[in-house]
Amino acid sequence: MKCAFCGDQVVYVRQYDKTALCIKHFNEQMVKRTQRTITKHKMLKRDDRVAVGVSGGKDSIALLNILTKIESEFPESEIVAITIDEGIEGYREEGMLYAKKNIQKLNIEHHIYSFKSDFGYDLDEIISKLGERGKSREFGACSYCGILRRKILNQAAQDVGADILLTGHNLEDEAETVLLNIIRGDIQRLSRLDPKPRKIHTSLVPRAKPFRNSPQAEIVMYCYLNDLEYQEIQCPYAVEAYRGDVREFIFKTQEKQPMLSFNILRGHEKLLKMMQTVPPKKELRECNNCGEATTSDFCRGCWLKNQLDS
Ligand code: SF4
Ligand code: ZN
Image 1 (cartoon, rainbow, N blue to C red):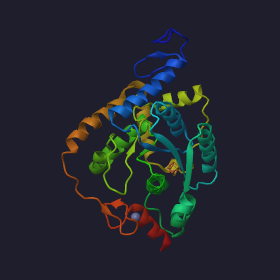
Image 2: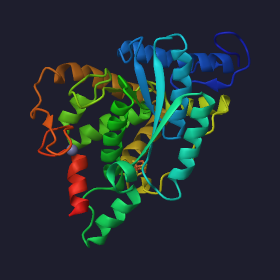
Image 3: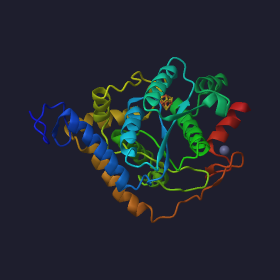
Image 4: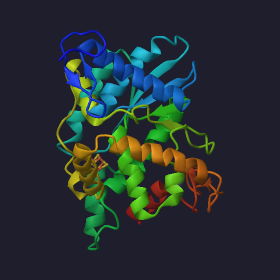
């Protein structure tokens, strides 16, 4: 089998359209698709200071690598990397090492924040503290982790003066989030899941996901072909995640229907146009404690802090 572009030796056959690619054209296609996604959804401006959330996993490491290639054509823009240490013993340390190693190689400004220093408790402490109270936790560990990571990433992006915050969520991650919100009937969240970054409140840095059209298998292959080292072991709390069932459904169905995740996202984009004509049920206001945007008296991070401190 020959590369569809140049006839060289094939290293990868794209699952969804069976295009055979050599290493040069595989890499080129990965960069081009990221560029097209950024352009289509107007994710970046030429002179943006771009913050990238880098965990040390495959998605964020590959995204940072590809963004530096794209950014080299825009001398007025800048990239800074942000890593959040959630404080998960036996897991997070390795991810931090891979994040630091890759960021140093690319010579990018790196800012590290942690749950412990920015929130007062690390994730392990939060989980054991909530368990100590003799009542079962209201949510899974990933919910608490998600609330705080989102909050601290936003604060970090503001601290470093970023115009936009990019994260490495890939095609299947996005399809999974769309399906989860449909399953939960959470139309508000479904309508906020806009691929185009929007400044919805002064306290929130706009966010975007340039890998939303990049399949996970191709990101893994990109890391492998470009010798990018990343953390492969799974977080010990991942088994608690309800997302796991939806994820399994996506990957299983995708074996027979390779366009599944693309179709879910295209369907959601069409729905979005209709949903955005409906005004939100609750207006955003400022958290009484930290000033971050929320629909209640307190943001979810401050609500959690209050629970832990009391
Ligand atoms: Fe946090 Fe859950 Fe991810 Fe672990 S799997 S890092 S707890 S969101
Ligand atoms: Zn708050």
